[in-house]
Image (cartoon, rainbow, N blue to C red; front, side, top):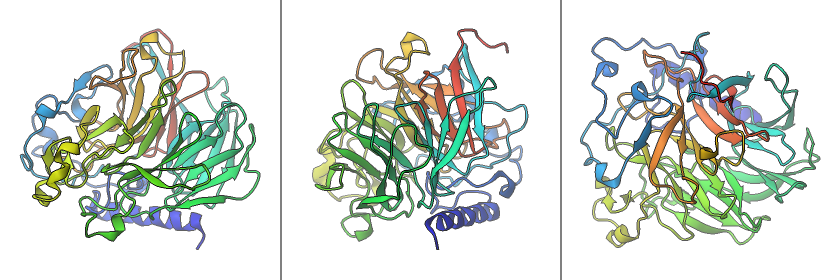
Length: 459
């Protein structure tokens, strides 16, 4: 079976499971493939369901209170004890986007539909010449777009490479205006394709760089190069929610950010204890590595927070024995007590179960100056929370510094209808060459373009 065929079969099977259960199975983690709207039509919630429950107590929230411009901050002191609430299994009810449904951005921003009809668009990256590369994970291919028409659509589109195995991360090497390779994070390997600026099709077949632990629960593999191009970072999520690596060989080299030379040599663990570091980014000024993380499930609605954080070389972030600093997971009580003091507290705590995916630094000049150097993150949306949370793009302000003070802001919302049905799930965020923000959405299989006009839209 070809890799592309395997990926399509996997996506189809996931769709069947969702159509039977009406929710994500316990083995379908945050980054499970999106199911098609045609396959999912479970009954709407009744008047006694969780949608009619009171809103969560701040700083915790759900989709009902997500509004562009709302600032939130979760601190370590806000964390409830484990099992303060029951653990839910509440996957999204995906529907086709109604004609009047549209993402909502802060005043002064305009949202346009840039592209549609894709096959599970995930990571999106812009080449040095401005071309837009998108990983269509279900179809096993990379697509490239160029330009924008007067109608706001791509001027050209082509398939750059196909036959891949759930491609996700994309990186250009070396940096600068003339990269020679496009690196791709397949679920079981890092590959690279020969490339020259402006190519619409790979100049040759895939070259194998390194094998990776295969798919499983967390199949996404993001890839990024250090600022000096000497190190390739690869994100590999855990194979489970809580398997102890001490007695689970399948967790070898998982729940880590790996580092290696561009040719795959000198492989090492850069940072560990990161349950699913599904998005990587490098600060364009300082060269510091940052990641976006899906934390564990099963401890209740408001545990454990997902997070976005700078990443220390050699740092340990807790999984599976500890979380958010000195909190031991009760399911592994008494194990590795020596790691308590070593567990790093992340920079920005997000809503638990948000499923935070790709992140990017805003380097453009199209948005107001206050956005310069800020971080955008795509929140794919919960399945382990009684009332859905996430399903949005957030902004992490850094206030013209290189640090984050812990708060984040709802930026792009509206992907969930008032009845709780979701029509969109943000995955990728990237800054286009002209400074607009591009957002992939594997719920509606679209790419959205967020531009700043300076004129608040009418209600």
